[in-house]
Length: 595
Ligand code: OXD
Ligand code: MN
Image 1: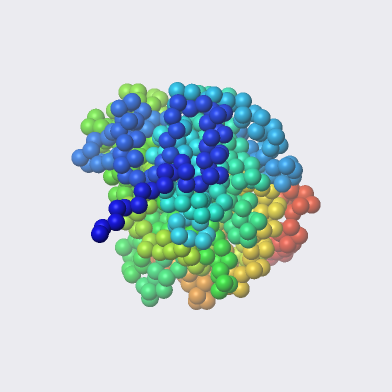
Image 2 (image 1 turned 135 degrees about the vertical axis):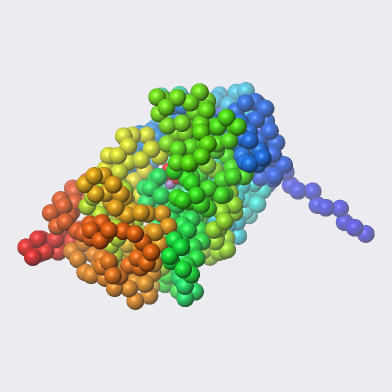
């Protein structure tokens, strides 16, 4: 006799701690309806149709862009807002000078007032999600409560969302509680609060990416970095890319660059024709969770399941993989539209915008047609270079860690740390020109250690100490590098072609890891000579290459002084080993100043 399929437990009854919390939140926010998200295709289809019918979402031309929609955010809500992003720890020093701080009691009191009754007339969505492969011991779960269906659609792409995540929580996994409401999208009533001690997040007044998709920056970086310190791992703002050389050796590199500095492009790099036999695969483009493995190596998972990438500049020559993957089932935010209703952005060499990102007739006098921080949200599995190992529960082993910034001068194309501790100084001393990914003046150079300035959920001094501890635990630590694809000549022209040609630099790193690549020792670390790089088929003037690999001692002494001043802000909490590394750098620079 055939047995009838077992009825599934309703989501609302699966995990009592979640149900209790939802009931508490509902009594505060007073929604009209509660919807528990199961993550099914049917659910997503329905939500999408509802949003299209209400005019919140705009279906794009479906013949060439099947399944693609456009969402226009409020014009005053287009980027992360660091000035209203707080870390609420009991002791202010635990948040550190790198964060805005508020006491948990003050944070909750302020947010309670904002959340009170804020969901009247709205639906409260319960979004259970898992960051990382659902069967991975390294993955961590969360539940986001939100009143934005747009947020649900994004979370469905960016995370493993729905029933399996709630089942994992029901079986005893701890979970991060994220409460979000778009409120009235009033910038004066906008706060993003993090309570790392309670694994909780409260975000009000913004519907934009990093402020609202709580699984991403709020959970997978700010809260996870705190969790990682307690549990002995690292949560980092890093892409993870797989590289197979012509001899068939497979390596993985994790690289930290500030927002909008090309992580997505590097993660999906296409080798230039002249570098035969290389294969590149993508594990992740924004966040890496790094764990010391039993074999003494560092292993990485990508906690995300999708990409929330910057659109402008994406074209077949900068990032063919991204260009191809965003032609179907993609949620665009704040791009322009052509006369035939296709998405358009600056950097495409065909088509023309007729409607700008705000829905106005396009007029160049209003600036770019697509917002500079316009985004695509797309499933990672649509990436043609998606790694077959991206779902491995134990992650992938990391051979090299790369730090990088956007600097028109000072930092050479690439240099290698002398050892792991020196590498921590390379990361701690990182600086970069500000981009459109966060509110603020674009172009100003700011210190952005490990590309984590906006994302580290605790005091940077403790964070660097934690990095040093992790290094000490690794019998086979990855080598650490610093790169700068953005160095310019006196006329302001980029010296390095970037994009696919960046593989030449990564290839040198792997040669170094294998004990083969040559280098010259300098005061700041080991640099390749031109002859150490594979430059086959690259059209680059010898003086451009020389400038890319040059170190100006005076500039570097100034840089070291700036790093000293910056690190000084962390006072006596700074780990002694880091102070020692800085002093050693200064001493090497002083020695060479006379030679
Ligand atoms: C992002 C960011 O969205 O870093 O990834 O701002
Ligand atoms: Mn990012």
